[in-house]
Length: 199
Ligand SMILES: Nc1nc2c(c(=O)[nH]1)N[C@H]1C(S)=C(S)[C@@H](COP(=O)(O)O)O[C@H]1N2
Ligand SMILES: [Mo]
Image (tube, rainbow, N blue to C red):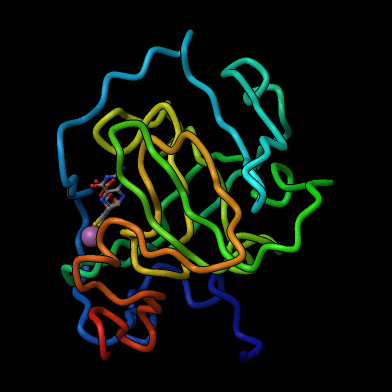
């Protein structure tokens, strides 16, 4: 890390900000493997289940929205090669959601309304690296982008940022999610260009 801040460099977009093989977009593409699920806030819940299958946490929408949230400005990188810089979100840190959860798990599987799943090491969700986001660009997160709430894990390819997230299952053994079982890289670091199996 150098000492020149992003603010000092201003708004110029240098290729140093783009992982290999990525190009910039100004719009916000929608990529969904299936239809946008209709999630009623009355029925919405977010749960955390531990490696023994025990439900450790459960929030309804009001309970979730009563948790402390924070603004997040991050770059996002899709495996289909588009990147979008300085996107602004509002979300609850996974550190807040996982606070006090007793677990010896090393892995997590994000589960979504509509059935999509994605896996990641638990440590990629902690220490300020991941959020459950409900706001985008100063507005409520739109349904096509994952509203009411989606996972936001910007240091990994954007398929790990599960839309319409409804829970996190903690696991002792890693378990591939939807795209991971169809040939996408298990981890998905955009800076290492980990797009597919074997990358
Ligand atoms: N539930 C769910 N989450 C998902 C997806 C999906 O199909 N279903 N697609 C993933 C992929 S491949 C990408 S690139 C991003 C796209 O998010 P966007 O539509 O907001 O751009 O969502 C990810 N999260
Ligand atoms: Mo993607």
